[in-house]
Length: 275
Ligand SMILES: [Zn+2]
Image (tube, rainbow, N blue to C red):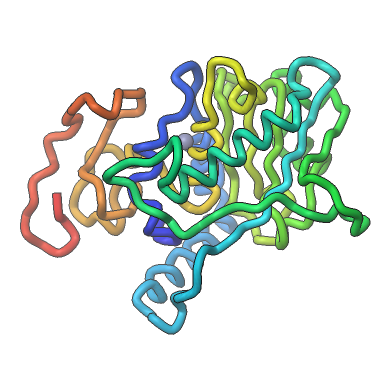
């Protein structure tokens, strides 16, 4: 993916929770198997690729600010987390994308992408960007589908990124996952969103890195280990971004631990094979 190249390495730096994984790849594979969705996404990818060197399309202004709405889907349990938990995670996400504060890294980048909370609700009234929905749909292990939660809670997807907070999120066969992101539907579709378990944002043992990770997916990034060790053309293979060597690890390795998971990372001196 090439939409936001400045978020290079983001998903390798921002590991999702150590307790649970991310179901993005499973949802992504379902989208790839849908010829209409994969076709429209392919067209978008081509547009990004052909326009990425067009200076007329690049903004010289400051940050891009993206409005977000947090939908807490709850059944009056612990998943009904506090506003302060949401704002803490929201601040953390902005720090991560700006490479400042608690997420500063010497090798990090300021993506020039920031996030703001929605200011007005659907009736035009001021609110704090957090909407609470009481519903049994909070638990996907009870047969609740992505379509069901999508239709329950959303603001205009052309104007806001919808983030849905759940008690339980399911991946394939409903294995334990912390969340996922979907952005492959047409831009006006309420199905485009981030879905994430409340524990990933609450003040317990997890930090907000799962939210940062899923936002990376929402903005177009694949896992760096997507497609395994294939290493012929970095614009196509792996995550499609040329900043990282091939990687086959789908399990978490501490950032300071150097592990070479592929034997294909030899620079053949062609432009699209820097590793
Ligand atoms: Zn992921």
